[in-house]
Amino acid sequence: MHQRIAHSHAFNSGRCAAETEPGTKAAVELVQLYDWLVSARALPQADTKETA
Image 1 (cartoon, rainbow, N blue to C red):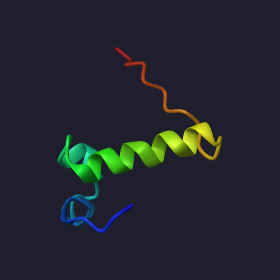
Image 2 (image 1 turned 180 degrees about the vertical axis):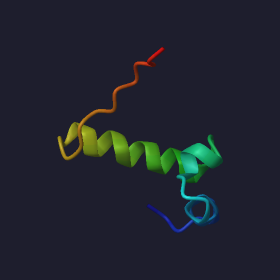
Image 3 (image 1 turned 60 degrees about the horizontal axis):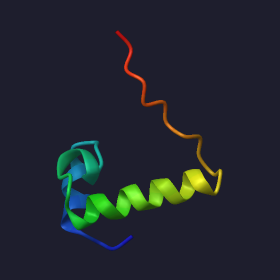
Image 4 (image 1 turned 30 degrees about the vertical axis):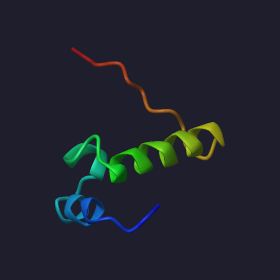
């Protein structure tokens, strides 16, 4: 991951760049890192089902 201002802004609000500024290079990097960690089985895949 690169040092990007979007990461700093998101961190200050307790969120990630993908939540605060989706579509930016910072958000894309974060999603790619997450996907890599899931594929490497370092993290469990998130449950994307919505509960009612």
